[in-house]
Length: 348
Image (cartoon, rainbow, N blue to C red; front, side, top):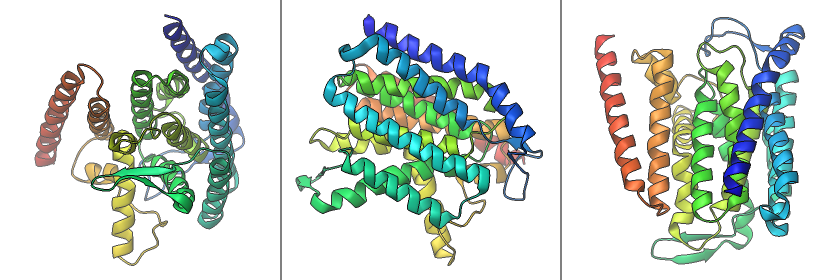
């Protein structure tokens, strides 16, 4: 009962703060000309403020601060509290990197270097992937490989969320679904602190969607996507990648399968064509769905459905009771969405 109360508190505070602060942030961004301009690679047709990540970051941290004062060690034990703090510090550092990029446009190489530096510091603080459980090989200690693999996971997820942020409400909705899924699995495995952190993030994203869903009035910017990506990636290490089972490794990938596979596919296509993997283009999943004739909103909702489906598979793999019904429901929903998408593509 107490955990339920705390969950409602973090959700309510995060949602309320973001909804109430976005108009103020939007006004400041427009006043100082910090907006995202239309281009051939982008879908929006008018300048839109891109500093919404400020509200997402502050809303999440405020909600966690309040519940931390209320819950104390009943939720955040000393060991867990230390790990949560380091993930929050890393998330805030990534937010600052993204925010500076939103304001002055950092070079891709400098951005990546800063990301690797922050991820390395968090690894030194103990937020790390120390082992993998591989089929046929069992538990495999990573040793020195722990550092590059942890950096690859943290920076990879951050950039996957950033790259999928190409349509109104897409990155915020996909991230919200992922955060809620991590929260559900964490609650089942007894990681209440991880669940609360993810619910605080989900609350901020729900509030942000109020302004970000098509037609969007504000974008999260790199600051927002970097904060969200690192938060989910970091808390996945703390809450999910902690047991010596193959499911512990697979779960985070399943939950984030849509943005991760989209990023990997785009990188491989760019390399195949002799392009830099960091070059911008219109090869992402949402671009391809738009190209075959789907509307902006239906494309976003279709990718939501796909993310719900992979999330349901993660919930089932975690062994949560009655999860088979969730998988059946999301599979049916995905099937209907796919049929509708095919019909619309045929008509275009």
